[in-house]
Length: 164
Ligand code: MG
Image 1 (tube, helix red, strand yellow):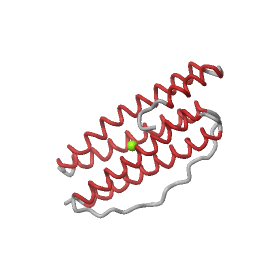
Image 2 (spheres, protein in one colour):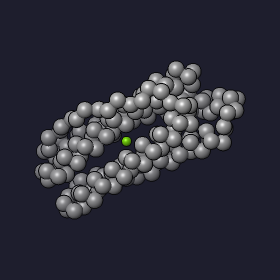
Image 3 (cartoon, protein in one colour):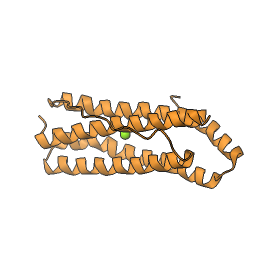
């Protein structure tokens, strides 16, 4: 069984993962409109990954005899100032997700829910990877500045992401 406090926090995180998918999908749509198919493809893959994260929470809540409760999703922005702004926002978003996972982790520790703690380890590690990969793209975009040829090459590079 899940403690009430753990169940509601798990549901909250389930919503945040689905919201992440929604945000990445909006960013993918923007990138398509800017004729950056590699960026769009990377962001589409990321959106699918976020749905998979959400489903991990969905399944875990059910497996532990909890009740899934879905809240409403917020409307993500449709427009961005450019690819750098997209990835700066993505980095900020991933940092917020890491903090939320950290808060959830403290709650399950306080509730002495060791099964949830062990299960959440995967997410804590995954967030290190998320911040690293998004952070590297931010750094590349800052280095590129307004050089269209370099942006073209990065777009080609991002298209190669597995699962695309
Ligand atoms: Mg996630």
